View 1 (cartoon, rainbow, N blue to C red):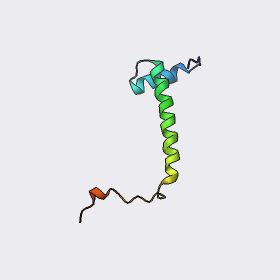
View 2: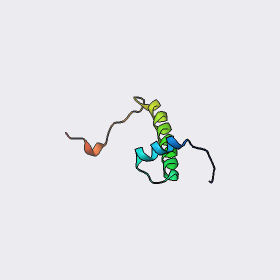
View 3: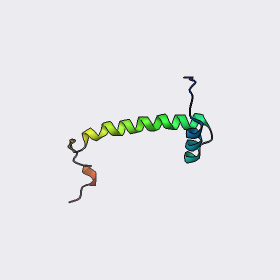
View 4: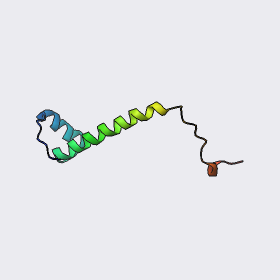
Length: 62
């Protein structure tokens, strides 16, 4: 998808410096991936303590 957006120059410079990435395209892609990952983590929290996991039978000793 091609899109034209106005991004604050200082914010982009800070993001480039913080990440070590070379292009604005890379920074935008990383930002979008990060937002997606954070949202998935937020959704996963609802399952904490609710799943009945017994572990891997192969790993049990005794």
